[in-house]
Amino acid sequence: MRNGVIPGSRGAVRPIRLLGDPGLGAPCEEVTAFDTALARLVEDMYATMYAAHGVGLAANQIGVPLRVFVYDCPDDEDHRHLGHVVNPRLVEADGVTVRGPEGCLSLPGIEAGTPRYDRAVVEGMTVTGEPVRVEGTGFFARCLQHENDHLDGGLFTDRLTGLRRRRALRAVRRAPWAREDPPDSA
Image (cartoon, rainbow, N blue to C red; front, side, top):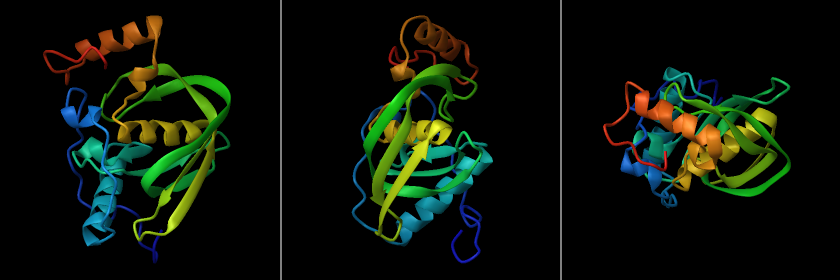
């Protein structure tokens, strides 16, 4: 919290882009202006994430093709991690690979056992341009990897193979929000 203000409390809830939106499949651009527009974007992202009951949200999920994500996510010990990263880079992802349940606000209702490393480190900047390094383990490491994938134009379903992938794609096709022609790369 900044100055006692709850993140997102001054933000506007924006529509979340769903699978099939071209912005979800394109890599995002680096942020170059650390200004009030960026601060407003981060506030809106928190508000949107909380309204959708998520634990993380990338800017392209609300139609803004910039390298920014927010999170409010527990780790496996139920310690809360709250923050944002501008221009994040996944600099370490290691440890054991764990296949755990994963979903996405851009694929509502779809969940699949997705392999992720049990530890991740992201480096980037804060909304004011200060360097930040975020390290996570367990579920929080999963969140960091998931949000970073979004900014590179990827979805968790890209990491699925075999039967898990086929089941997830079938569920996407049947979802009430699905487009008539969902992409094969869902």
